[in-house]
Image (cartoon, rainbow, N blue to C red; front, side):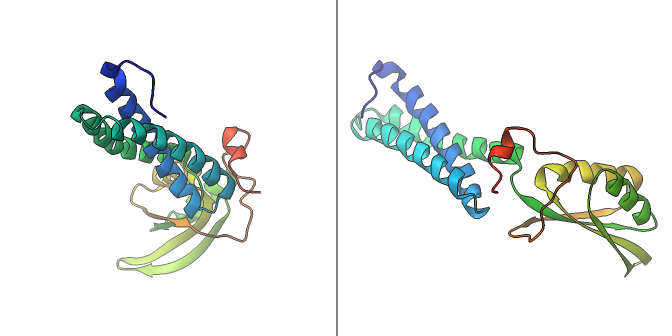
Length: 187
């Protein structure tokens, strides 16, 4: 299916199509890794549909090198846009560890007050006793939780990792699911 637009506009159309399909592909890949079957399938359908239209317009007009440049540039920009979108969506959960020298209890209390589940441990660091806080949360909450911890103890160490699977429901949380992202959350 070739696009019926003026040939002068075709490179721009190919460029925009590639940005769209590669961005969708990046987000789809994350959805696959997170086990979001429905959203991954829908994104894959739209991604391939756009890709077929774009590639057919490049292949049928190989005599126009600007189309090839638009294809490659769209791919490059699409990767960056896809990563940006995925970061904004912040799908999934994270494990966060906060290590504090003396203010761990205060950080834990503040986070619990905001609805976070916090497990506290006593530990020994290089310079003496430390408090370790262990949290599992929606990824979208991670930046806010880190800001709160650093407000109380600017020298605390914060480490986050993606969660592949968790056997607990993470509700109620700091960010209630009442927005459009609730549609993407697996039941």
